[in-house]
Length: 122
Image (cartoon, rainbow, N blue to C red):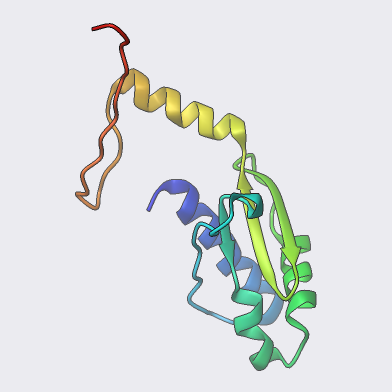
């Protein structure tokens, strides 16, 4: 996964550790519906039985205490306890320009990455 994914995961892990003293494995994934952002996690629902608190309140507390970063445009807590993240458009454009200019993409997992540069009428 990319630097954005790792940054969000690390930030969540540190915030949960600081707030609740827990060291948990964080699952972060793209949501099935794009209206819910670029990444989502249900970590508040996973911690709810441990903390014996409402997962939505846990999610709200985590969102309120996440450090500010230029990477994230918006973070929100949704019932029953999801936390959704929107990556900053400026960061996405900056990274896309880097890929286009270098014609190279970081690919540590050795997956095939295809970038097409369409040229009509050629």
